[in-house]
Length: 305
Image 1: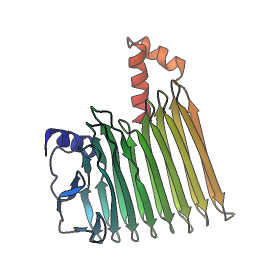
Image 2 (image 1 turned 30 degrees about the horizontal axis):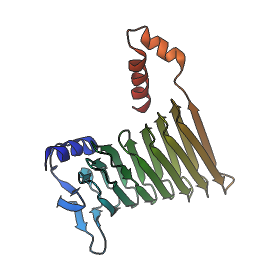
Image 3 (image 1 turned 90 degrees about the vertical axis):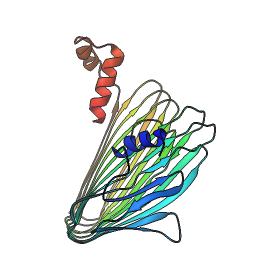
Image 4 (image 1 turned 180 degrees about the horizontal axis):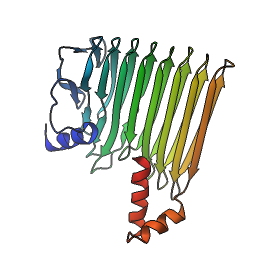
């Protein structure tokens, strides 16, 4: 890896080099390297780009890194990754995509990730998207995630996109069974003329199913954001979706909720708040010696933390 690729790897996965243990590293549209461990098998797909990851039942306190790096302008790819997490396992999966576009062409990565959690399995999934470049080309990322949670399982997703992505359409679908839980924490920041669209569609299929979706975003410049959330309660279940956004300059933000209760025992809640930074917050920080710009940055960083 060259320095640009190493820097991208650090940004999206928090590592400086090829990690130990189970991993799959993809660079410029090709598999750069992969490694399985005793309890985690990574298998290259034969029919399309991507991998299958199999995690043995009962696996505890192990992690998998699957970052994608693009440093070649004009490269466009679509990758399929499937995760099969065995009964009573408890693992962390670190994904993410970093693009450095130093040319005039558009670079694009689309990842379709499917998660299948067996009974009482637990998974924490961390995904960060990051873009940069010194040319005129655009960076596009379109992640699609599908989750199927069996009885008693739990999945927590942490997704972030805070710099350098010109256009993104992010879709997450899920089916949550008896006493299973899906939790999503999303952070997005756009600036310039960037566009970001997020869509959640979760079915709470059986008694005790639950979901909690939180999206926090900041829209600057003339950027546009759209947040769509759809929760369907088909049993005695609980669902909560929350969208909080700070809007600045000439940006636009839309929050479009849809909650559908198809059982009298379903409890579903949607919350949305869009507004500018409160003046009293700025004044308070400026009295401590910060400039207005520094105060804005502090507030935004705290909001997205």
